[in-house]
Image (cartoon, rainbow, N blue to C red; front, side):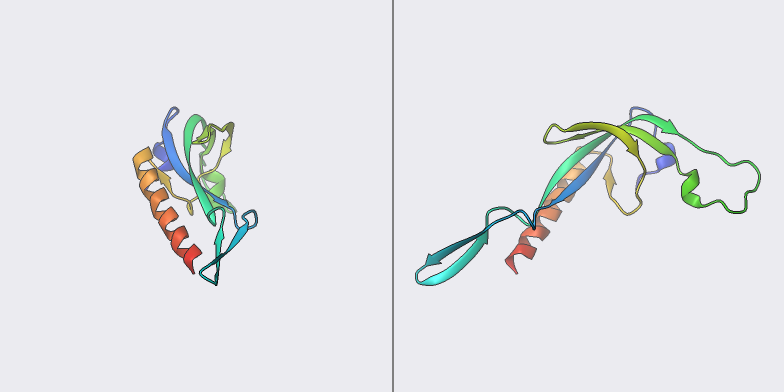
Length: 126
């Protein structure tokens, strides 16, 4: 679990990004020994490992009481550089998403990516 309040400028996190290929893949038909067989030219989903480098942090604090504050308004905001395994590099704002998985090392991200790829292969079989 990553503590976003402990992150510093220059810290690096990793994330596994999912690309859904369901609508772009083609079905291939073959007849083998008189039976129809189908397969796809690409998997249902592909995964890439993204590297997130923190370039800037906007930390917010509240003094005293404020009745209508919503938790996310006080969450830190980050300016980051994204780089992916296919050499794509982008800079921009990043908001920590509690529903996504972030990793401290690339090795942890690769293990998770392998698990997702295995699960996707099983989904494609059915």
